[in-house]
Length: 222
Image (cartoon, rainbow, N blue to C red; front, side):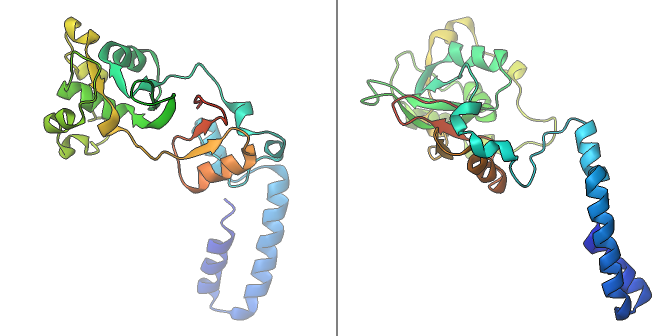
């Protein structure tokens, strides 16, 4: 189990003999070193057998020779700042992504630029509120009037809003919705030339679920 510190404390409390502490520490150190030469702890083995996503505390040695751009995969699914309802429903239905970059394009910006990241759960709440408009315009205030903060409260396990719960009529597919009010306007981003090892450490230490990889030139990748 590699419970070196816990086992050392337990044995010390059971024996109540400080003279045994150095010997116990030596034995545990040797045992852990020998065990690590053959396999990992039982908890690591269970995580691997169940196929659970897990990142090691330290990046793999090969990551030092790669940059963030080398592991970016596509095609990238992005939304415009003011997106068509049909495009959002199509992306939610045909992908399993939980986060989507939001990119402002002309006429809302001089050039394409990353303006935030929007989560699947927030998109579902927004679509359920039906804060749609017929024209492709910014409608932040209208969106906020139709949706309350409580709608974004985290639901219990298995109780969250699902795509099947939405009731979007066919004529509403061609309408537009403003994503700016629900987008995270300050997502964690790294430049595409950053070392993959540094990006992995940043991702793990901050407990991130999404990290945007932005190029030096215009455009966005994830």
